[in-house]
Image (tube, rainbow, N blue to C red; front, side, top):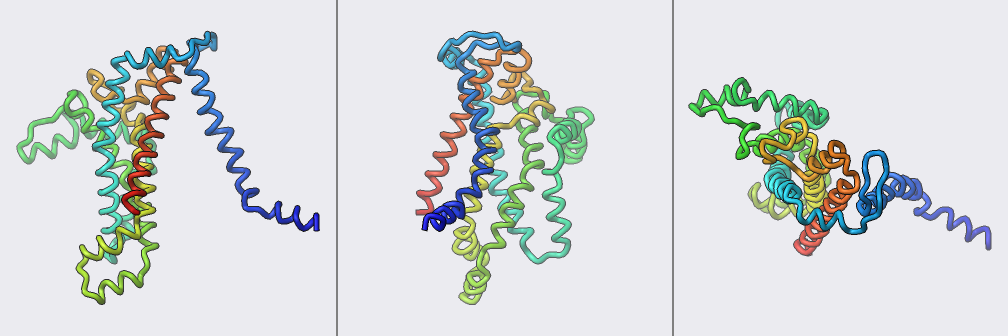
Length: 291
């Protein structure tokens, strides 16, 4: 009897999750806790520092550049988020149709996502160059004067937005495509027999079935957008005049150029809190919408 009980315990599904919990604790949870601990120190690059409690957080509240970076990050999210979610869904619906060249089109949409962010940044810095960039060249055919995409504070974030959407929208498209494969074929056929229009079929059948996929896409888009760094670093470096300075870019400058590791950890901790609060808020809103 005793041997039987032990065997049942060993067959528990939780044992299969132990490797994940171990890796999560070492590479995710551990660094998060360590970051919060470091944020309480006045620490320099050689590891010499003293415990100062919440002084870094008080300093951060009075840091004008941090608020500029946070504002720019939320502005970036407001631009990229809706376009990446709605645009990804639109492309997925389009590429889910039985059209000629569908495989090539799917590959072309997803292809930019496999490119390294540094390559994306350099490529789009050339494309958006104000005098010799290819985008301004073609806009000239429509009588549009050259636009200083990355050198003007009013357009620099738009340039980052264009590059980011081109690079990342393919990921959301693939996720939505996978979700569309799980929509029951019987429901589609039943709605067709009932004479439902394509728009009615989309609203009443497809979108409700895509709710779990939409949850995932919205949450990952928010999380990735709030952590934007690579495009900013390679295309503008946070300029001009801090117009594209994001929280992670500011964190990098404080930590690896000014060598204020404790203060950099404080910025990281606040960003973690912002991401956590926004993610939980969106998750609660979406669940209430479903209920």
